[in-house]
Length: 76
Image 1 (tube, helix red, strand yellow):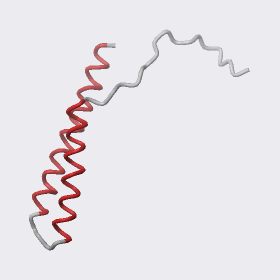
Image 2 (image 1 turned 180 degrees about the vertical axis):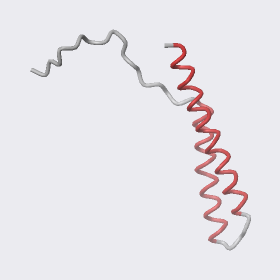
Image 3 (image 1 turned 45 degrees about the vertical axis):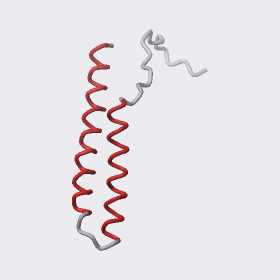
């Protein structure tokens, strides 16, 4: 039952851990979004700076995640 007729693959893809810099960038992004919301609620336009910081850190996180996936694919 459940046999697909294919031989099992000798290569199993293990889940990769998130790079540390990407994790830090995501934390900074979440904190910047929180700070932006608080700033706008208080009526300060300083929140614009926090929104820009959130965008920058979000892009950094995506970059480090893609770089780690690319290096993992090149190794394996």
